[in-house]
Length: 396
Image 1: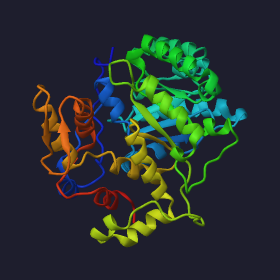
Image 2: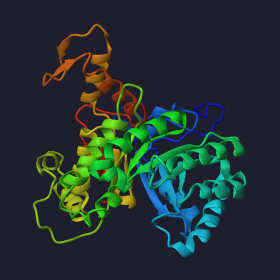
Image 3: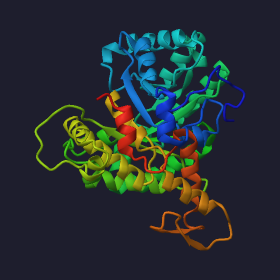
Image 4: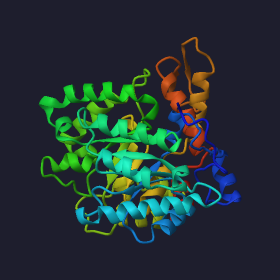
């Protein structure tokens, strides 16, 4: 079941906060609408930057509407790490009131999830909901493991039946059993089997790198990406290996959070090359990105993609534009993908851009995924770079 019986008054769309002249200038093929009734794989790709916000926030409804107007398309109302133990009940009631209030509007503002602490939290929230069930996309399941995860997934399935709407689950892989080398492979194999039982309900698998770092008393510096923390990147590689396969057994895996968003004293050189910004007459804009610690985020997003990861958890709205700018499919990627998929007879040919070889069989899965990404994030015009997208998206 994919939720195909449910429709929205109006679908969501990436970059819908940009005006038509800007969209025409930037995009060869503009982003297409998406919604709850879409295929699971397409909806997972559309997650993009998933913004976490404490469910206790007093202006939660207006915050969601404001962020939707700024281009956020998926958000998590957090009842776990972002909320103190003695505030969970207040957060639960606030989340319910917010979802109910949003349901009275003409359109769903974005994909909305709730991160609960226990399976009982799934039951309680859905039992308390009024009309808000119509805008709830699903639940984020923390500390997900082969033993603890079954109760979570069964709770989501039961809640889905109770409210008559297909609810998705996004398990967060972050437990010590996955982090520790001696138990990792057995735990990931067991998790893979469990997720396979509930395949139609798993929208994406999220990586909890902050908890992984905590296992070793590490807090990575803002001058480094998560891929510089070897004990964690080894875990990420194994998660992708077990759960991110493209043979029909895997899932979309989303990138871990980037924690920084303010000025600081730099120890190392910035991670953004100057040349792309000089070519676009955007040197000052590059300096602004560096001062906001967004250069490290941009580097990490590129490394996420290189390692088979799509989308990202974010905890600050300034991070959203960076994730989405690098999610748009370039004119070159699009033409390579369509050339690769043009025939299924195998073989190799030079890219139309004259800078690489396209092998039709080895690159076919990449091409298929690229066209799914193109459908939700659009295809940029020839010559348009991530700098152009960022300058249009970031408040300068």
